[in-house]
Image 1 (cartoon, rainbow, N blue to C red):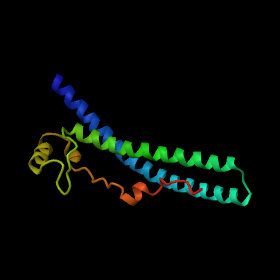
Image 2 (image 1 turned 45 degrees about the horizontal axis):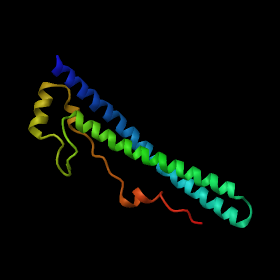
Image 3 (image 1 turned 90 degrees about the horizontal axis):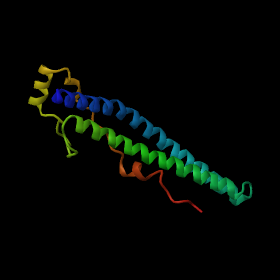
Length: 144
């Protein structure tokens, strides 16, 4: 009974991770755009302040908005990684580098396909990590 519970918990962990992963990736993409928009808002507020059309409160509000969006983006990027870790742990693996190699060996995957309904879990889609430019683009120092 303990073994069955362990397997069921592992399967639940994998399923939770597989469901959360694409949702979190989409959220990261949306928040990336939100950070860019908040950056443009800050730039506009700074120009308005220099020209006398806005006061320092407008600039401060824009800075706070940018910081809040950057914080949400960082949290979401962490959620993507946590989702991957959940899937790996549920499948019994660690966090080792798997570039260009299947996550589960072919023989094990075929055996899983014969014994269980888990064969679709053996073919996880690759997750693209953001490039260095994407990773650092929205985080910038104020231009004042």
